[in-house]
Image (cartoon, rainbow, N blue to C red; front, side, top):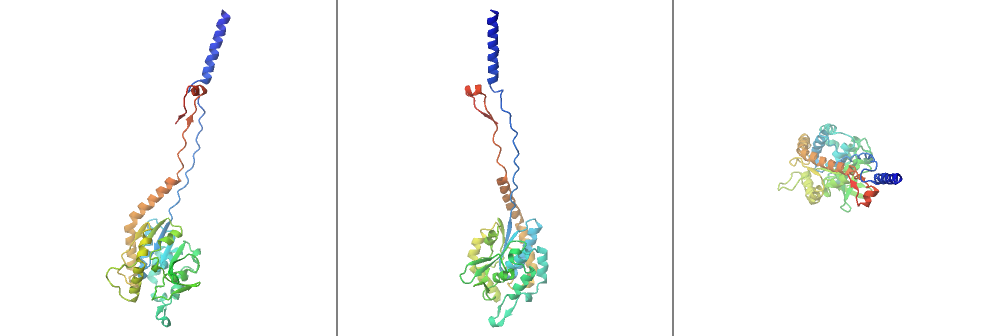
Length: 332
């Protein structure tokens, strides 16, 4: 009888041990500490500036750049058409806005204008080419401190030409060669004239240089029912009218458009350079809240895209007995 009791007791203990070994939810796998995945840094916003043509109104570009730099939005790529290509070349060479303003104040108009009587009184443009090359220390475009593009019009086929390599002064000269005022510029086998005919504000060129946020500065004259005075003013406004529709389409691809109030400045009125710079400053400051908001929005979007994915849920697998009883995984 005692032997029977001992046998039964042994079987009971063994059964309890088996149940404990296979038991329910008390047996869980050892949790694995998740490894923190460092977030990849968000790609910085690459700001580009597209400087439009407008003859003497182009001094306004200096004021715009001055305010952008002062507020922490320094452009890292530069494109320019006509007068914008002159300012753009100097800026891309490494000059800041204050240095460019000093150059503008000291600029003698005779140092960039060379009229040749045997060509019908047209400006040759060689002086402008030499002046720009002297300011950039005769460096080719691809050696400037910032990526730079000068936009001109191919006179042979009417297509846009974007110069990003080679002789900076020659590219600026081609971009600034107002038809009927400047002689066309021969580069290679083609002739080139003012870029304002096809791209008054070169937004697309700034994108091609790698900018993902483009600030366009539009100083072009608009047809307003008021006739311009002087030959240069008439020609300049005629070019603006010709390129107006194309210009509107291209401007629509900019992130921000700044329009300094310089339309009353004559195309050849260099005496108004100080006023033009001031108007550029005022227009840029008026646009600053919009610039700040849009750049911040782009930065946040990039930070969100660069953030690591959320960790996968940790799941506890049921025991063998739990599986027999139909229990599922529990995930936290």
